[in-house]
Amino acid sequence: MTTFTLDKVHSGVGFQVKHMMIAKAKGEFTDFDVKVEGDLENLEGLNIQVTVDPSSIDTKNDDRDGHLRSADFFDVDNFKSIKIVSKSISKVSANEYELTADVTIKDVTNTEKFTVEFNGTSKNPMDGSTVTGFDVEGKLNREAYGLTWNAPLETGGVLVGKEVKLSANFEFIVE
Image (cartoon, rainbow, N blue to C red):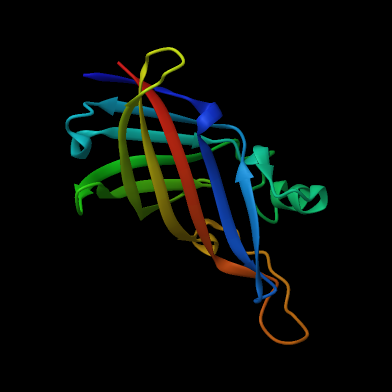
């Protein structure tokens, strides 16, 4: 059994969504945790649980961040975490896997699929520890989780796109 310890300094959880139908608004969640159980030699058997604090959202715009924390979006006063819990992992190619997971936002749970790239292992020259890394990509329909606020545009379309692209990278110290 491998012990996975998240290295938050070398990890991140980001997202992007269409803004005004013509550009992308990008951001990240700065407070998150990832628990992995299983064996590094059997990635398809890993159990993964990701917990994200939605109040840690950072889009580099204080007004927008405040709106995203409000009841119009994440309602952080009533919903303290976003959870992603693995259901299955399937190998697609040499280093690519498909993760099927239950995603819970604002007490709404849907099953989603994510692409996971296994980046291998390496020795950290600073302390000799063994590290491993994963990149994760996915898409969610925010409205499926009750994040339905929007505003119509004078030129047609809406202010905020429905599809949210997720991009995360996680580095772990392994023993």
